[in-house]
View 1 (cartoon, rainbow, N blue to C red):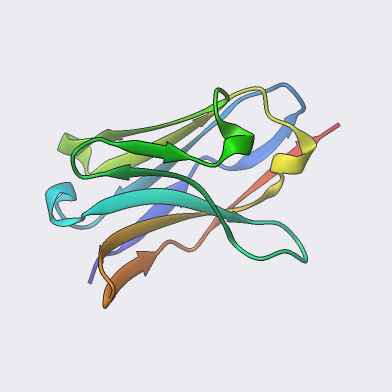
View 2 (tube, rainbow, N blue to C red):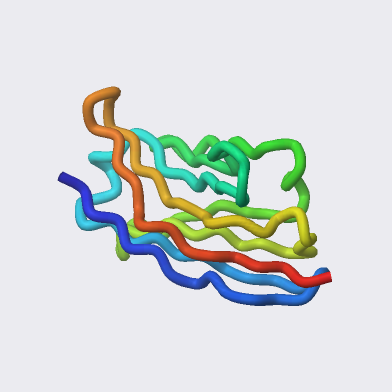
Length: 116
């Protein structure tokens, strides 16, 4: 069982920056892919960014060139640096750790609010 603890959410003005952190309880190398998803009020949870075990990254088009996913293997932590934030980025952001279809873990979520 992988435990994920997120931090770094908050309130920021449009154009500002935030960095989210997600600390995993297991060695990062046992997890095939880690990433971030978000859910805005009244909407379904959506993919934001992922990083595979080999370092390959993927981003949803709406955050490309603004968000950067990275990891610190020594700390078993994955980060999401969010720059040039927009009001439409407001959502609860969830960390995800994927090992297999039967081992797919989620954090508790952290709120990000961007004011206009």
